[in-house]
Image (cartoon, rainbow, N blue to C red; front, side, top):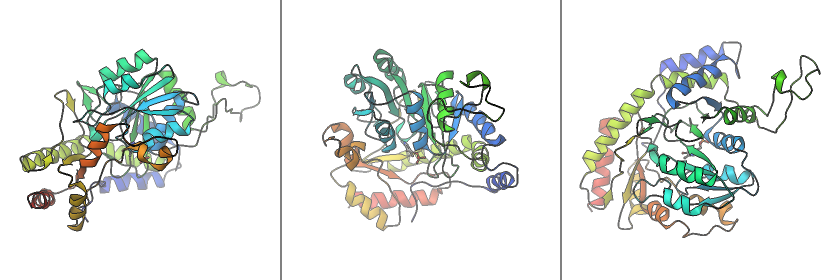
Length: 374
Ligand SMILES: *Cc1c(COP(=O)(O)O)cnc(C)c1O
């Protein structure tokens, strides 16, 4: 089965991991800081590496002190973790609808969803295409809320020439194997403000503080460290940071290949009946994580089944987050975000990854054409 996404791992990656395994540190050694500094060069803001993208979201909400009584406005067109991690901290998630074409959080819908309890607005750069950050910034500022970017799809993307990582107060990344670069499991939080960064770092490290200036009981002894606020162990090990640093060296090449493949799909699929292709705003230079097409005329399920039967691992991204039973059980009902639900009903992700060959891509196009023209 041709997958919809997969990692690119080279001998250089393997050697970097082997060198880390032979070193003195398996976790929290020098490679963590190295990886964080290299990430900062891409994201444009200091980063804290964490164990996955879900942990990154949990850490970002914790750093923003999201908790019971707070509302978090976000998009349903995302992986459930964007919303579930806020719910796990006791916040109420308020889903706002998406733009009809990009499937990104609609600033007008987000604004309409704001209440006096809104403490965070979380956008998702769907498929790698940045959300409308300048408008979302106004919505968040007017609400007195933090702006969070779930950029699990969008490391290396830019918005009006500004890198994803600098557009929100907190930005989260995922390095899962299907994403744009991988550490196996992995993620990061970028923060544009020192206090948020420091709280993210502490939360990632069980809440432990060692800095003598910050200890409540500084005379306890040389061994002493304290937990002023609870955290979790979300550390990304040295061994995986070695892989991340090695992968990051190819990020520009990854972006170039993904762009070429997406533009090839654009050209090869233009004019196919019953099909809508993804859009790109003039101001966006996206890292093309997904190639999300729309299958019209109620044929999405049929096309999904027939493509899979033909050995082509298409995917659907995503079931609206509030359709998950955990949200249903909290009282969220279908119909809440009709634009997102219509998008979901038609959405299909075609295979897109660095090692996808032109001939495999031709096979995807031919299979899709054959189905849609019959
Ligand atoms: C992958 C993903 C996550 C979660 O990342 P993991 O590393 O799998 O935990 C969160 N949000 C979005 C939009 C994602 O695509």
